[in-house]
Length: 206
Image 1 (cartoon, one colour):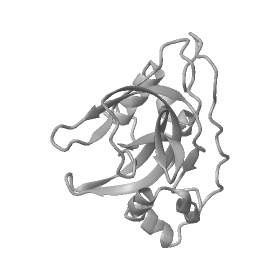
Image 2: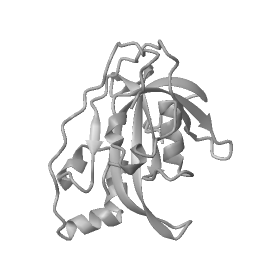
Image 3: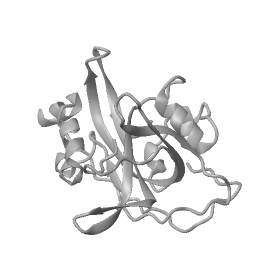
């Protein structure tokens, strides 16, 4: 799979439902994952956001809260990822863009996250991603950007990823194929998050 197209608070108090200003700092290809519910496999990607205004203390150090969501890698008209990206962009994709969209362009891009809570479990989740209003001040990102393409990056690179993501990747059909001898490409350059700029009326996030 190519990148062209849970909150991990460590037992901390979940985020309260509401809207938060965030910035995308992670995009991780977790390969083809099998679904027991649907009885089939599909390519999945994890998108991670930093919420700079919400802090948590970990090992005596104050850090930003982070949230993530997993999506099927598809720009099909009914795909959740396409709906999320269209709302984030403020417009749907053109026919030309649908021929090949580089998903890594969302790294460093700000948004508004709608965080909701499932009453049945008490767990919070990303219910929506929206484009910030024009003139909104971009958040001060502090997290180092993470970009991982399971098809093209060395498998050793997963060691820098959160443990739960490493475990998920290792369950994928793609990872098992890679261990069987499929080659890897070059690691892409890091993407620096943009800070302290203002969104202009003509700006399109990606």
